[in-house]
Image 1: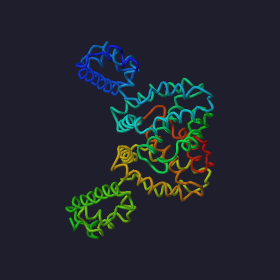
Image 2 (image 1 turned 120 degrees about the horizontal axis):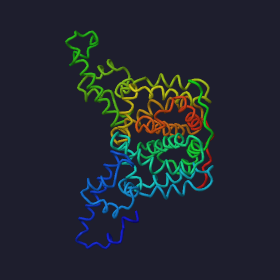
Image 3 (image 1 turned 180 degrees about the horizontal axis):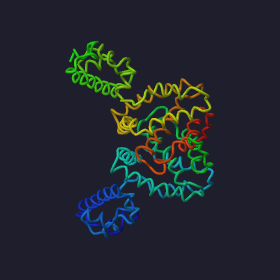
Image 4 (image 1 turned 135 degrees about the horizontal axis):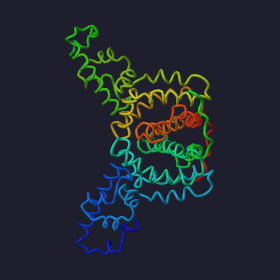
Length: 210
Length: 210
C-alpha cells in the first residue's frame, strides 16, 4: 500500500494524471483477471503486466509486492494483515471473540463492506469469482489464523470458522434476515464467539460411526 | 389451453399433454414472480392465476394449497414439512443433531441440491431472489423449528441457526472450500451440531457492555 503513493507518482506532472490512473486501472483489471483464473500462486506480475501492456517494473512501482497488488485488486477496505495481526495476538482462549470483533468492525461499516459484498456475491455465483474469493480466504485469512494457533487439524478448524463467518455475512448483510440484521455487535459476539472459539481451539469431536 | 385445466385434464388425450404442461409452467413462473415480489402473504392465487391467464380454480386443481404451490414453484426436491416434522420430533436436547442430519441428507445429494443452490444463489444476489429465499426460510423452516421448541427469543435463535446453515452451504457446496467440501457427513455433524444445539436451546448469552 505504501508503494501506491510512491514519491515519483505523487509528484507526476498534472497532465499525466489521467493516463497515470488509467494505467493503474488497467493493471488492477489484469490482476483481478489473473488472480481469478490462476489463484495467488498461478498469477504472475510478469503475466499481469503483459495483459495490461506495461513493464513489470511499473507494476512493482505502483503496487509494491504481489500481496499488495492482490489487496489493491480486491479493493480491500482495510489491510487484513494488520487487522488479523491485532486479532490473533493475545490469549488464545479469547481468539474467537477478538476475531469476530475485528470481522464485525469491518463488515458493520457500510462503506467498508461494499467491495467485500461484491467479492462474496461473485464468489458464490461460480467461476471466476469463486477462485478469487477462495484465494482471498486462503491467502489473507486462513494462513494468518492458522499461524497464530497451535492445534491439530487447523485447516479443518479454519474452514469451519469460515462457514460460520460466511453464514453471518449471508444472513446479516446480504439477506438482511431479521432479527440478525439489526442485532447489536455485542449480541452477535456474545452468541457467535463461543462457536468460533470452539472451532479453533476446542477438543476434536468424536465422530460417531455412520 | 382452458381445456388443459379441466378436471379431466389428467385424462386428456395424448395430443393435449404439451399444452397441459405448458400451462403448469406458466402458473409456476407466475407464482415464482409473485412470491419473489410480494412474499408468501402478499402473493395471491387469484393474482397468480391472472398473470398466467388461467382460472384460479385451475391453480388449485393443479397444485393444491398455496403452500403446495409455493413448494412446486421453488422446485423443492423434498417436502420440508415432512423432513422437519421428523427432525423436530424427539428429545429437544438432540434437535441440533437431527436438524443438521436432515439438512445434510438433502444437501449432500447432488440432484436434490440443484434447485436449492439456484434458490440460495439468487437470494444472495439481491432482489427479487432475496425475498423468495427469505420467504422460503420463514415459511418452510423457521416456523416449524420454532413451534417445536419452548424457548425464549426463538426468532433470534432460528436466525443464528440459519447463519450457520447458510455458511455451511456456502463453504461446502458453493465455494467447495477444502477440507469442508470433502468432510464426511458424520464429521460435519460432530463439529457443527453442538453449535446448532446451543443456538436453539442453550442459555441466552450475557452480552458484555460495549
